[in-house]
Image 1 (cartoon, rainbow, N blue to C red):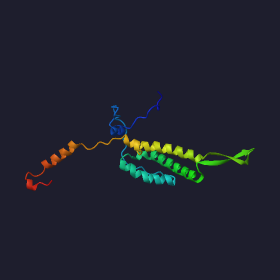
Image 2: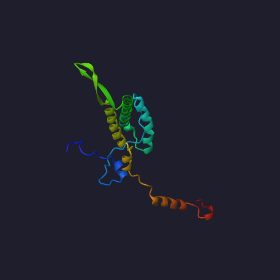
Image 3: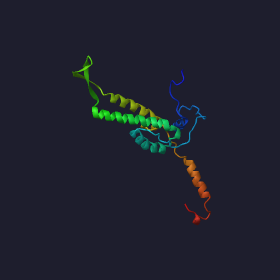
Image 4: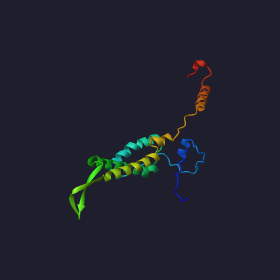
Length: 176
């Protein structure tokens, strides 16, 4: 099979979060960049810059953002800006637009209706946005595939036991 075809491998962190149901050995040599907020690229369109400022804190809270994610995040924000602009055009012109019929290069009184090109642009941008959102775990279905382990109850009990063991022997001096 040619390289690049087939299903893309999941990052090891995602496999671990999902519980690795396939029981395949994780890639222990996978690079793991340090968490961090990438710098917003200069020259982003206004709508893209606003989306960057909105989504970066959310991704940081989820703990999925690193400085090396700058290009992917910028591409998502560009797709968002393109979608936003195309939707403004659809609102202004409608889903269907009139196109004059030309005869010998001259417009006639006849016209035909066709799909507004901004609709296709909007649809394409939405597909790109979804692909990037899935990569960052920002869609309901992509989040549903991630399992977060709850703290181990035995560790909590052990911590409590050890903290009580360090407490003074006199019950009157114990603070619980």
